Length: 340
Ligand code: 13P
Image 1 (cartoon, rainbow, N blue to C red):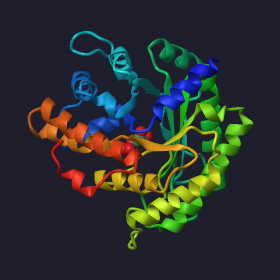
Image 2 (cartoon, rainbow, N blue to C red; image 1 turned 120 degrees about the horizontal axis):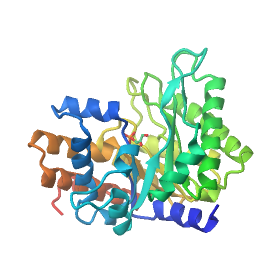
Image 3 (tube, helix red, strand yellow; image 1 turned 30 degrees about the horizontal axis):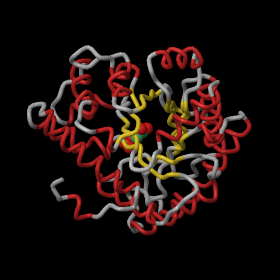
Image 4 (cartoon, helix red, strand yellow; image 1 turned 135 degrees about the vertical axis):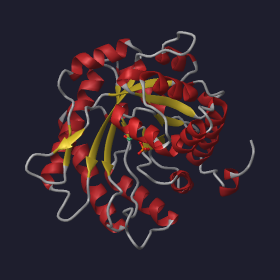
């Protein structure tokens, strides 16, 4: 284990002004998103689409790391450069999704547990050789009638900690991602209580598995109203509750927290992050690790204009720039329409 490397990678991932681009959708997920826009999902369309992001001019000003999928880490740019090399050449850290998905939790209807520990040590060694310096594992917690159960929270927290320990052994920084889903009609108070419980359990398991907290990045969901909740919490309440929940649960040794967007609109994901950073300084850097909230508009522009690379790339850079401002608490809604 190279502790120096773990520290420098983790610090680099959450450096102020920069955040993480998640383009690690599984084949079924990217397939659904492409199909909705009339694009066929093939190895080549996925390569061309993802290359659009990596080749965006000055992406490195806003993006510190990219989460790749197994297929993508083995692909190359048009000129034959392997994607991990292309990214690291721009000072962007390549990362890799290593979980094998959220599967139904036995005996608990409606709940999931993330799998993927099998052969993980060997897979991490290979990914390190391919250039990955961080990894991602996403656990999913659903709020509903009588759930989440204690067994679901414990099973997922245990899996995250076992994964994190294996990553650090391989000198790969683990992104620890416990996502409390927005789906449902629960209110923000319920989300706050569940997220607090989940994070307490995750950090307790990380300690049991001897994970170095200064060599991880936490990727939580924000504390937010359920997507079908009739009383929507304001941006200010989301920021207050999310920061409060993190202060109660996340040790200050953790260098950074990079939020997922989880189905929020592009604008909400940016303004929530901005509002939290306006409340700083915090013990940890607060940044983004967005998938949909960085890609949605870019994918639409690309797909609906006959695979328009320049248009898609410009839409992505615009979003990345706004989220970069949000990491400093200097985003203004007027920037949404301003030309750079
Ligand atoms: P979203 O930002 O679309 O939630 O995706 C982030 C991610 O990596 C989910 O695991």
